[in-house]
Length: 197
Image 1 (cartoon, rainbow, N blue to C red):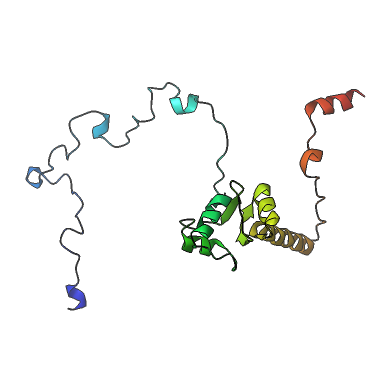
Image 2: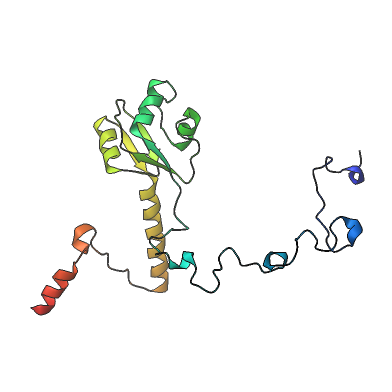
């Protein structure tokens, strides 16, 4: 076989329909568009158009926000880990990370990372490397004598160091850190009371 003899299998490539080629083409006159009306022409707007009335999708209230940059994490509960250990699929002596969980069949794929959830009970001593973990899961693992390395904390520290380095190069002073938790929340009532005094 030569390069000029290579071709697709029969039926693998379908030719596009060429319209407006006369009645002998099989798609003559209306070219497969039917007869008259908006749908027989280009620029159809029937789906979202309500005759000039405010469309339904614009009348409905809008709530929430979908972050396009949000990480997609594979969630794992403690009971799933325990089931895999009991079934002999996970080796508790070695470090357990996303690849080990995929190999054991605990999760299908790692995605952007693994998030450890605290539902269930763990009996063995585990050394886990995950993207993040809930406080309940951390307490349960540490109570069993294990440890959890959270990659999220390391990534955030590196990102903060990069920002500080960039600001230092530009001669900017580091921004003051706001207190976290309830200390950062000031209610409207507290603000009004302070204003009256």
